[in-house]
Amino acid sequence: MTQMNVLVWINESTWPSCVAAARELAPAGASLTLLHVVDDAVPAAARGAFAGRDVRVEQRSGRVEREVVAAAEGMNLLVVARDGDLRRLGPHPLAPATRFVVDHAPCATLLVWPAAAPGVESIPPPPLHPPH
Image 1 (tube, rainbow, N blue to C red):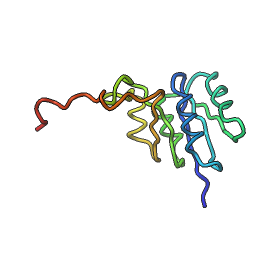
Image 2: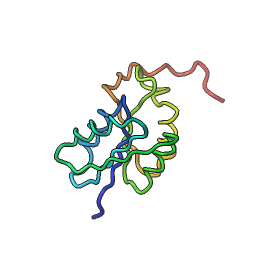
Image 3: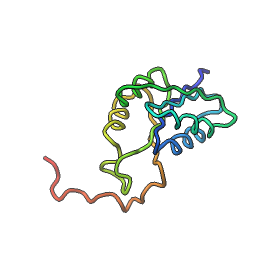
């Protein structure tokens, strides 16, 4: 069986939820890579959350969305958190860079909520007129 390669995209505001999802859902033998594209402090904190597991840290600079997509090449899974309007389910739960990553990732993508998800009653009502 081939080893699973998991890339965890971390940033200042959403890394705890991404790390928690990867810890819970990635198989014990998976190769884990934390990817951060900017600040040096976040990867060290996130690495500590994986106590007892071998974790590689990769830092890149450049256009965030393109660096994340490039880093996901050859991975089996990309873990990313919602970072847009989190007050309700849809229609804008992803910031533009995250939307680009989800749309262009060359591997399976696990999209997690950075906190408890709002209830289904938060879904906006349907439009008054159906689209043509």
